[in-house]
Length: 137
Image (cartoon, rainbow, N blue to C red):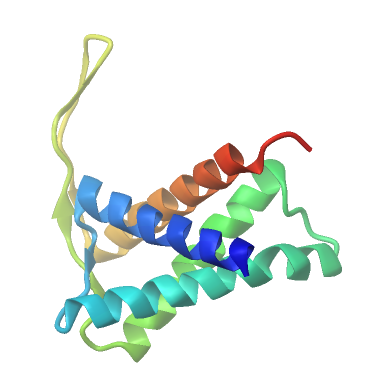
């Protein structure tokens, strides 16, 4: 139970962090209900992901597991756009970014690419939080 609650909290933080960085998701009205439903669906994905990938002998750790996680996160979010009419991927614009003296120009993202970038942010943030909480094994 504690593990499922931790996964739920990590997923909620990951979705909120992605929304804070790029505003890629439009949860519509009622906001909280749709947000919690999406977090719950992603929590169920993350709970079932490792045992299913291990059972069919696919990588669930490392870079391979991260790629499967990213693809499945995008697929789940896309399927949720079909089942929840108020939830959608929004076209967004990135801001200018200055890294080590190099300027990365702003880009306009369509709804599809916004969903891909948003789901990758959710997946990477969730994986990072899971890594931080794993401890020594």
